[in-house]
Image 1 (tube, rainbow, N blue to C red):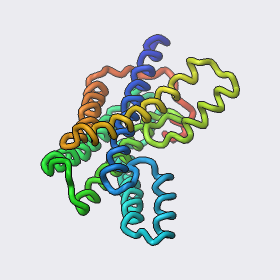
Image 2 (image 1 turned 135 degrees about the vertical axis):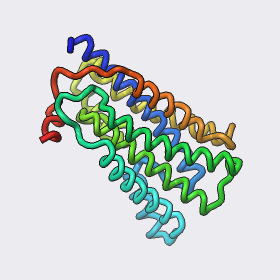
Image 3 (image 1 turned 180 degrees about the vertical axis):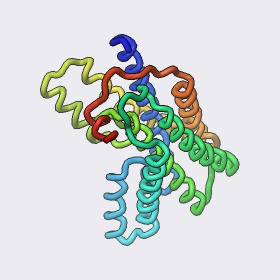
Length: 241
């Protein structure tokens, strides 16, 4: 594979991960504002909420945070089984990563259908079910992105991305090196804003703001011809042994 071809494949892959991070932001916003005040992907935040709410005796709200954590963990486990582990010599975007994202599409589709049928006003019990589905979906997404075998690349847990970006600025790394991390972080913020705006302005169909872009991402990933890389990241090679 030529260097330009590898660079093009890497750029397409990162663009898809940035788009996935936008979806993460929208789903997180909907979960936090409309499904019990818990995050669908930010498990560190949920652990803090679980501790605070448990200590204050807010057991129902603590249960929401605990449910999100459990569902995310189950999503990661299931996604890892579906996506598998990085292997040497694979395409820049392995087919099994798309298969895992297909499972996420089913989960997000289920959330959208139930939400729309109920007119954007699910009751407390249904909210818990939808929160669990959202958290499981983003857990699956986390495993799918890990399947790409690129150290530090994520669309859900981004504290490390922020740390890397700031450290890179401090070390005066080139802007081209810092830009990918900046785009991912910006996508999360924009996605969260879009999710909140959809909940306020088009509440009966708000989940479509996440589902429609996600289906577009999945289609692009499935239809793109991903060439074989000419090298394997150290983390990828280690994972394949």
